[in-house]
Length: 579
Image (cartoon, rainbow, N blue to C red):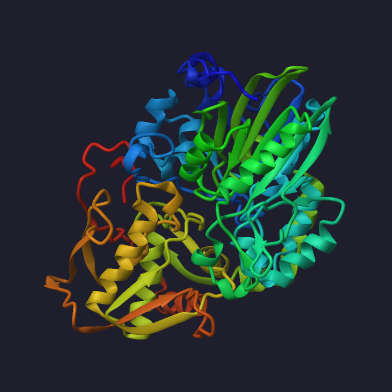
């Protein structure tokens, strides 16, 4: 087991010596020309090597993705990673403002930095980086934390096959899941049984059958690497049937299953396995709590919450310590965890979360060819122009994003609604000002298997109950009760929220214009992505596309964020990222 602490030297080296020392060389590195390998010169350390990607949301090509300007923590998580953003984060981890690392990990000066440093991620670039690191790290495993088969038009239309083929070519060894389940149980089992057989281990210790409580998937796998046995346990998103339609996976139950996890770890340790890691899609706050309670895990490589956390967090528990990381989203990052393991166990480690800058990496030709083949049948639909945006369009953040405003305005106008709700999904790429909004860009915000638009009559009391319920999913002080994404986005109304208030008391002052919402009055509420079985309606992308074509030019949108009480001075928000 792990009994090492992270020194200040290790903390800073996780970001690269030059950046940690405050040397402003990053800007020149990108501007000097493409395909600079110096940034990715990560010396081999130890004899056990794990590469980690998560939450790419089917983004095969490089993207722009703005990190949040607000990521509030509550309870003991307040003002601690991952709930530190913007300039607060850069100061906490000693990253110089204006550098490429600052652009990767924060929203500061996003538009200017995006033009300077370019798009990030992309499987052709990720493939080159993975292959390079593997060439220096014999036996290295590539772990995929899930949310891989969903989030793009081609993934939706191919039922995830584009991403399955890309992951096989990329060389993924092990994966777990969340949004994969929205393709339906039959499709998931088909991929696991056929495409992945003998090639990728699909793990989820916390998914059981409802009737007999039998495991649906393997719980763990053991790999041999340079004479060391390494166990990887899979942890799917525990609240999938709550956050997504349960009727798509009607026979499977989920949960954190902490007790069962501890039993699995104990069984593995009794076999004399030297390294035990959890490949998790819990979300970082859940992983931090889990690490404090489950013993025997050397590391938790996490996803779900899309937190690009530059440094590992060391969590003590009653028998040792566990490294906890979270690997960001959209293919922007690749985690590299190296262990030095002796006969007595782990003696030391190194961790880097490497940003994937497309300007610094030569794309892999085979992966480029696969991506072209995948996209070719759909090029006309993908490239269809819908409108021009005058302002920056993004989603990520605790409350409304500017792309959400477009969806909400379209729902209200097209369905003649008083109010609109849009799910607080964390996925969705970013468009720079004066860009064309294509059908592909719209589907990057809306591509699910249940994206029906809806119009429902609700009382003011019901509207408050919904907002209170979602707020508790996000701001409950106990991470094990945090079951949602970000806060539901709202259009046509305003409200006040106090994140640290008790459940049922967070939402106040709900208004349409200057008029208080009447708890007994009926309002027409538009929405999309209903989880209830049997729901129907026009696909939301068709509704929004029609609205965009009519508008032709979309003016800058200022997110309709609520008034927030009790967060003054929080490190989880910054005003330096504009709208």
